[in-house]
Image (cartoon, rainbow, N blue to C red; front, top):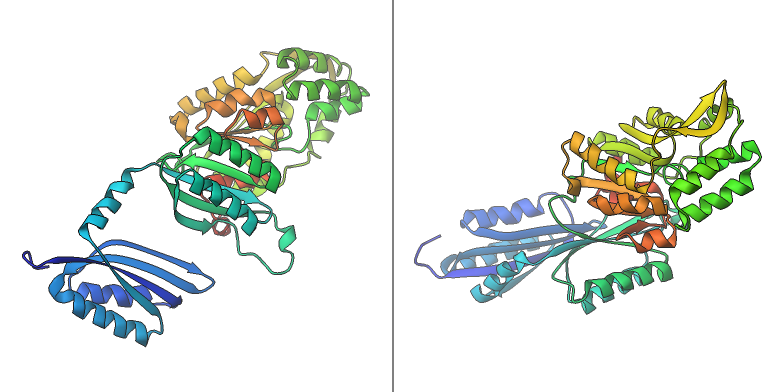
Length: 409
């Protein structure tokens, strides 16, 4: 570009049927006149191209550039529009890049226009601007759409919420009313560089509370289940409830544990989640108030890296009604998360925790990303992220992973 020539900034917007070579053809015309590309973005929706290029050139060549671009657009049967941008407008646009950026993730079985409309209405009220929208889940079939395992839309937004607490409260109300999970995260360097994830086991990785299964075999199911539910709601101390429940298992044969382990009901999405996490090198841990025997079984099944749980005392092939060592309670789970992060040299902001019970709250609030999974109301109220509408592999959407990634692992 000639040093003394007047600069011109022009935005071109291209729309039409997507085909190979469109971007190459247009940018090579710009290259011919030594134009500087200030910004470029492209999206494809059902083979329809939407391409924007913001470029700067000297005033003497802008006419020739636009003429050649018009001819090329006609030749390729695409629509092209030109918009001049003043230097003042451009400078203001550059200055806005320092504003806060957030990612909003919408999860459910099938995302609808009503749900998107309700969420975006909240964003408008909070003064947030949407920069980009992308679908992370697979393409929607015409038949069987209602039975889809999951659907996910990700919004990239910019700005500062006028009242973040009010916005979060509104999202919680919409989640309940519209049966959708809404995640709101800062778009920072840690979001896509998570390196450690810690799971609760019972009612998270598996669809049962193992202690209830053991109690059924011991004939004390109702008693143990009542204590379990009270503990998960946070009504009684976990230490106390754990001791009471284990005592009721006295005399149960050790062989029962093997039979239960081999028939554990695995939570929807766990297989795909574990396969993906291992493929991208994220370390996986089980931090459970349940029992080591079952944690070790899952460790072998899914190649999990760490298991910390409670050890039942067994004498002469029978449970004694006592446990060995310290109880893994809520406080201990948070301590173990920090410990494993130190061992793996992972910044705490790069950690994830997933759980469903009141004893998971300290762990969820310690991790860089805490996710309440199909959790009790008290747990959801004390964490910033939750999944209640789809399987455990929904965690991957929180990390920005697309369904198409799964075909590569």
